[in-house]
Structures are given as structure tokens and as C-alpha cells.
Image 1 (cartoon, rainbow over the protein chains, first blue to last red):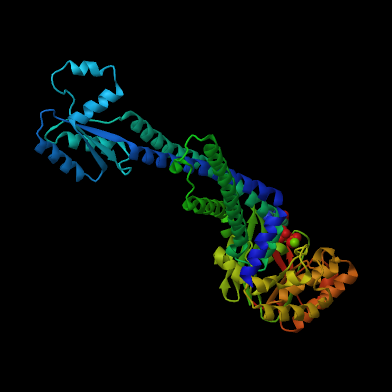
Image 2 (cartoon, rainbow over the protein chains, first blue to last red):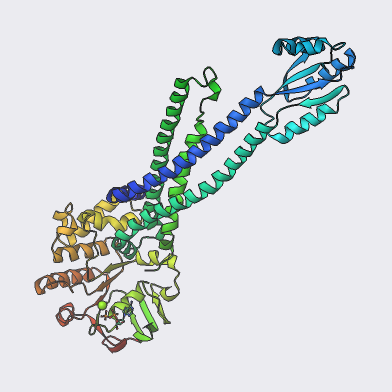
Length: 298
Length: 222
Ligand SMILES: Nc1ncnc2c1ncn2[C@@H]1O[C@H](COP(=O)(O)OP(=O)(O)O)[C@@H](O)[C@H]1O
Ligand SMILES: [Mg+2]
């Protein structure tokens, strides 16, 4: 009888304060949409970094004078690197042919030289697991130490930039998340406080007939939790809409044609996270606003 | 049942209760009188734990109310029925919903609760209005509902603060008769009123308060 009563009371509160509840829901949803956009951007960016890094090639140049034995040793050694997903050996002759193909005019230059000045090289495709600059640098440094290796080339700049952007995103998410969470808690707490205020007399009556603080408070906590959960659900719908919109735009524009993994991702965990965060915000703020009820005597 | 030892309560250094001592035994009907502002309401409040006395001790059914922690107050109140002057009903809820509330709070099973509510509503002559919202009832009817709610969990003590304060003479008689019947069934009653007619009709031990002092206590035993 009691749980049913408490739930009914919460429902009545929600109904009576439709307007404020709606504001609370919209605020929660807004917060969570902002939060969700951030999380999604972050995840997509991270995903993108990973994807692009899968494509990134590290070129290990070998000493032109290195013997066949040394060269195969280097390759063997590189194959043991966990980061290397694919290895391609480019011999001196291949390098010359590619050079001639790519730069037909300059090939004359090479003809004037005796022998082939181009070094042999090994092209390594890197695993997306090596996301950050540090491990990439460490990897290059390690490879450089191998006998027969003259130098290692990779384009660091844009990886640096992306890594930096991702870390800014992390910082931004924390700052904006905190601000938004605080404002949401304030607004939900106010909605609940209004509920409390308009039912002041009722609360007095309940106290008079022996209701405990918890009994009086629970409907308001339920009210806040439902409000938060609905806000979370609403934000989920809005975010799905946004993501769907971008997905359509992107595939229509053909920019990323055929590159499925470049399209926005929306993991299930994010949906769960949003609704849970909404519920927690709602529950937390209502607990905050009914806290006084627990100790007052009369 | 109730024992007060040198109880004082001050509001901004102004004594609402000043060294009040008395004892009420089980089954008594005590009428607390005195002019407005004498401290009657304050006295009832310290008994049901809404105010903490500044000095003195109060024993209610062997519990020291003056020392009771806030969390224990609800359990104290479940052992007593409280009726106040302004009816304290939920106007948008039905008669039944109002009266059943103390039982809901205590987690009484639905069937048992229904039986008890019907019983007390019959006792106060309101069982035919169970599904009516209390907001539309007349003053006398509302006070009868309050009394029904106060006795629904069979308290051994009924505290009533000016229960007839908002009622005309005819309705006052009705309520007094109802309280007498409740007393006759064994409930201890402490009734505060400044209405001399009520004092006469109730016929019980009278404690007269004036400016926070007990000036007359007809049945003083200690
Ligand atoms: N909450 C309060 N704050 C300040 N003074 C109060 C308060 N409650 C009662 N008083 C004062 O205490 C005195 C006794 O009040 P009360 O117990 O209500 O008297 P009664 O019920 O006999 O009319 C009065 O002088 C009143 O003004
Ligand atoms: Mg009074």
C-alpha cells in the first residue's frame, strides 16, 4: 500500500506542476544534449583519429650500402613490432621506378648519376592502437636504433594537432559538463522546491499524523528522478535526430563516399549514459531540495 | 500517561509556559482552559513534540518528549490523535483518503485499513460521504473527519486544540458529544479550549492556564 501511495503522490506532483516540470525536463534535456554532443564529437573524433592513424605510414629508410642480410633482418625485426600491421619492402630499383613514374621530368637528373642513389625502404602501416604521439615517437626512435636504418619518416604534425584537439575536448567536456550539471541541478531543485512549497500544508498534516521525513520526501525524490529520466530520454531523441541528420547530409554530399567508418557513431552506451545521467541529476537535485525535511521537528 | 515537571517555554524571553507541572492519568478527560494567549497551544505542542521546552521534562507514555530526537517524533505521534482548530484536511482528497492516511503511513494492509476507516467514519456519522472531497464539506463535517482521522489508529491519547473554534453553537455541541463518546470508550483526552460552554458541556477535570501559569487544577494529584 505504501509504495503505491508514494508513487501516486509523485505522479500527482508531476501533474500539478506540469509547467515547471516541463521546464525542468527541457532544461535537463538541453544539458544532456549539449553533454551528448560533446561526448559524440569526442568519440567520433577519437574514432577518426584512430581510423586515420590506421592509414598512416611510417617509412623506414635503409642504408644504401646495407647488405641483403641486414635488410631482411630489419624486416624480420619490424614484423615483431605489435604496432606494425602491414609491411611493404621497397627495394632500391622499385624506389627508382616509382620516382620516375611520379616525377618524369626529374628522372633525367637521376640518369646523370652513376648507380641508383635512392635507398631501399620499408613502409609500415600503423595500428590505430598507437593513437598518441608519444608511443609513435618511441616507436620511431626504437626503429632508428636498428642496424642498417638511416632514418625514419612520419608526418607528426597533424597527429599532434589531433591529439591536442582531443585533449582540449576532454578538458572542455569537464568544464562545460560541470557548468551545465550545476545549472540543471539548480533548476530541477527549484522545481522540486516549488512542489514542496505548494504542498506545505499537506506536509504539515503528514507530520502531524506521524509521517517520517523519509515518507514525506520520497514522492519528491521520485518526482525528480522521473523528471530527469524523461529529460534524458528527450535528449536521446534529439541527439539521435542530430546524428541522423548529419549522417544523411554526409552521405548525400558524397564526401566520405564508401568510407563507412567515417560516418558518425552513436554507441549504445551513450544512450544508456544519457538516461542514467538524467536520472542521477534528477534524483540528486531532489534529494538536495528535500534534505531539510529530514531533520525539521514540527 | 502524561507528566510535566516544571516545564517552561520562552518565545523571545517572553514565557509562553512558566513552570508548568501536572499529571494526567490514563482514561482521564482533561480540559485545558484559559484566555487566548495563555499558552494552551504551546502546552499541547510540547506534548506532541512540535516544540521543545526550554526547561523541564515531559513524560508521555514513559517517553521523555523533551529529550526525544527529531527522528523519534513521528513514532510518538502515531500513538496519539491530534485535532486542531483549522481542520488540517487535504481538501482535494476524499473523506476516505484523508482518514486512511495515518494507516497508509504506518503500512497497514489495505483490507484492514478499509475496515478501520469505515468503523471510525460510522462512529462520527460520516460513512455515507466516503468518496466526497473534504473541501466541499461543511465546517462541522470537516471537524468530524479530523476527529475520525485522529482516532483511526486507536490512540490511547487524543489531543484537541480548540476543536470547536471555527464552529457555531449547534455544531460545537455535536463535536463535544462526539468527544465524550470517544472518552467513554476509554481514550484519554486532553482538550484545549477558551470556550466556557465547551468546558461546561465536557464535564471533566479542568486545568486553567493564565500567562503560562497553571492557576487552577481541579484534579491535582501531585
Ligand atoms: N511561534 C511563536 N513565536 C513567538 N511567540 C509565540 C509563538 N507561539 C506562541 N507565542 C506566544 O506565546 C504565548 C502563548 O501562545 P499560545 O500557546 O498560542 O496561547 P493560546 O493557545 O492559549 O492562545 C502568546 O503570547 C503567543 O504570542
Ligand atoms: Mg491556541
